[in-house]
Length: 231
Length: 127
Image (tube, rainbow over the protein chains, first blue to last red):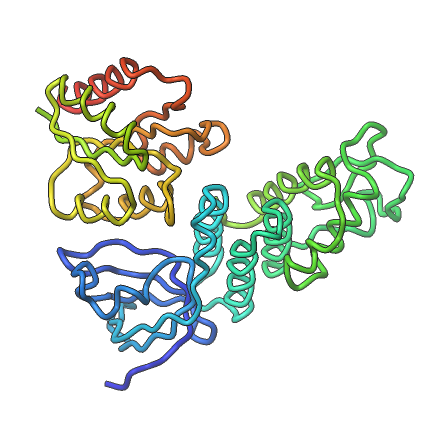
């Protein structure tokens, strides 16, 4: 049987018998794949170094029956080792992997792999604030899933104004005019940039006050929870 | 007699906690790093793990997720005993997902409170 190769990121790992692991990986060109990694609980396994979380790996595998293939070899391509030096980033990295795993079906577009790679790179970069990464990632996931919020007009189809305050309607995925609403021009501008920029690094170069950013993390997370399968 | 894995990078604290737990009749193994913890988990059977989250090179969150990905380690009860405040770290949902029995904020937890928590959890385990 012919071996296949892929660039992959591990989404989940569970054990399988005494010495094996089942891993679910997201690949760039072959979607999401489940593989048995044999013998990786043994200390000297050649695979042990290549199936870590928070890394990109070059893998060779044999496709199998019932959607479970066999991992033949794995070589570490890029390890985002700085993530685990920070507990908050570690927690979010696990959260993000879970979100991607839930949102993607068996044949996700390559864009999900690229997004995940960018997200891990951002978490690995201590100069990028965690809340910036979270806001950017949530917006990108919404965009990929076709749930981009309406950042141009309000629920009554009026152009969003710099002088108004707004609440947010999750049903309409639009801002709703509210005289004492929590969101204003700066929030909306930042969201527009978060949707547009391809990396969190770029977004982090935009100066933003914590009182603007902090509510946007929760707002975008709630958008995802209401419209995607992240929970 | 219960077997406890104490994951505590601070040597002095590890000695203090370990002595107190042994005085209460438990068998205690100490790990100061995540890889030591994994090696001990592989080599021995534990009933309970007491876990500090702030560990050099890797951290306790990684160890926690790793543990819960192994079916044979899912029976081990877990007390997080950490210098990281609970509200900063874990929602009750995450605690439930990771099957954490108790979260103790180290600066505000006395030694006897730690020991009492161990006894409570172990007695629930066997009731």
